[in-house]
Amino acid sequence: MRVLSSTLSAWKQHLTLRKDDAGGAPRRIDASAFRQIMREVAAPVAIIAAGEPGQRNGLTATAICSVSDNPPTVLTCVNQNAIAHGCIIDHGCFSINFLSSDQEAIAVGFSGANKIYGEDRFALGDWTEGSTGAPLLRDTICSLECKLIDHTAVATHTIFVGELISARTKSNCSALLYQHGAYKQLAPAMPRPALADCQS
Ligand SMILES: Cc1cc2nc3c(=O)[nH]c(=O)nc-3n(C[C@H](O)[C@H](O)[C@H](O)COP(=O)(O)O)c2cc1C
Picture 1 (tube, rainbow, N blue to C red):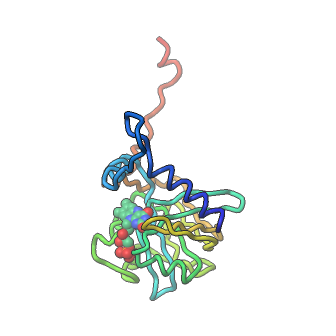
Picture 2 (picture 1 turned 90 degrees about the vertical axis):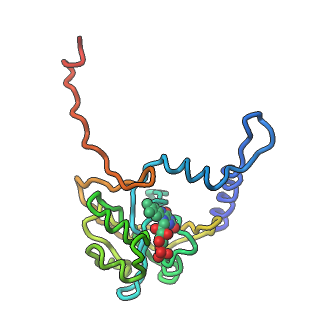
């Protein structure tokens, strides 16, 4: 935990400060400029979920990253005000469910846009339980069941580090992405021209 905290504090210093164009004193990039920059980045959309049936909580999230394959480890960043935040800590396990492009309604519901909260969100989609009791969504690109092994607060969020306990995947599924404030999916790949067509 100490190693994670000191690495993160070094990152924080590096990310919040930059030289101005004239090479003068470092200055802060403000929150609104940062949000504008991050709007450009297309990210896969997932539902982070925790808790037992009747008392489950979940949220739509894009702040998710693979950390290591040995042991398989992932991280996600959750706002400390999210209802699921305490639920993840209390249960010590959680799931990350990467949505397919036909699961946009689930992303909307779990983002709070429809004013649906807590257990009521789980009426959206087909949910089961993993071996740890973490809620797992069916028909996703992949659903990862994780044991919470570390967490640390950074600014408004907590970074939750999870070791993979089980995973379900579905092949040939189109991913749900978020970019420019909207849900998107990748266009089908363009057919590649045959080599002979490229030679004049
Ligand atoms: C596309 C998208 C991505 C989001 N990513 C995150 C995220 O990575 N972490 C986070 O804490 N909130 C994220 N949010 C916001 C939460 O989904 C939202 O605040 C949710 O309502 C929190 O759950 P609660 O209402 O139960 O507190 C995202 C929202 C959207 C629409």
